[in-house]
Length: 131
Image 1: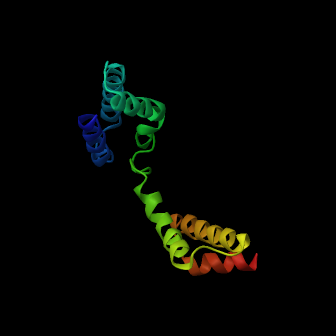
Image 2: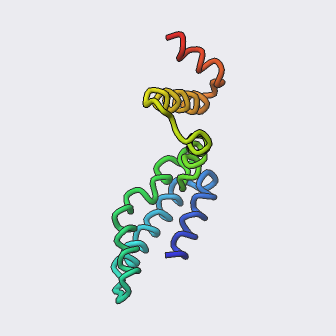
Image 3: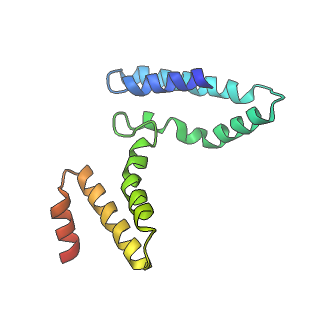
C-alpha cells in the first residue's frame, strides 16, 4: 500500500506538467495495481480491515486526476480551514447559543469560499451583513 500511495503522490506532484494521455495511462495503471492489492489474500485481520476501508474509498482516492491542478490529493487544505474554528471552540469552551456557532460557521464558510474566488474577507463580511 505504501508504495502504491507513493506513486499516487508522485502523480499528484507531476499532474500539471504531464500530458493528458500520460495522466490517463498512469491512472489506469494505479487502478489496476489497486485491484491487485485489494484482491491479495491475507491472514491478518488488521490488514483485511485496512484493505476493506481502502476498498470502500477507492472511488475517491484518485479524484484529483479528474481535476488536474484544481483538487488536492489530500484533505490537508480542508483540515487547515477547520483549524481556526477548532481553536476557537477549545479556547472558549464552545458557544452557549447555537445561533452563534451557526453564525461563525456561516461567516467562515462564506469568507473561505470568497477567498477562492479572489475576494477579500472584509468586503465579503460586509456583503453578508448588509444583505
